[in-house]
Length: 139
Image: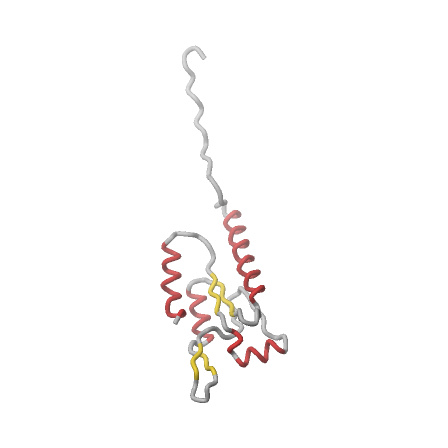
């Protein structure tokens, strides 16, 4: 299951020494019957503040062939919080919250860059101070 690999993927990313925000995105929100009702009522929403909506591909079939969650929302919340990551859930099948997810991730990247610039860590090439040339005897 993908969930089991997330901590290792985050560790590998952090080993690259790339100072960038991390986003964990759970898919298959359409499998969560409770979220289907919330979506129909227009109540489901996404946020980059580690507040979860529901669901992911973390389901298994129960005896009556209904889908049940394998990984709790709390476990997903703790994982995101542990790694200071953004987290949200989407449905690629129904396109629910997909556009919102991209907006939130983009906003998170832009906010991260803004904070870096305010801290004096601007992106780009750093140019050092040039040393004055030593004068030769006749110049």
